[in-house]
Image (tube, rainbow, N blue to C red; front, side, top):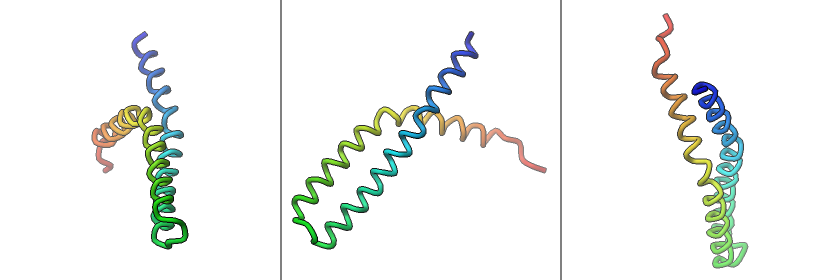
Length: 88
């Protein structure tokens, strides 16, 4: 019974990987794009800054529910990596 719950919890946590990666990648790309637009002075600076800040805030809020499951997954991977025997 306990092992089944653990398997279900791990499966549930693994469902957070794809949205986490997609949202994080979008956040990084969008941040770079907004920074580039600010540097070119192609658009009105205040408008670009406001849209950039709002979009980054929305993406960061969307990322919040995925942070703890991703941290658990990373902790398990690091524990597994550290406890692996040295290849001989």
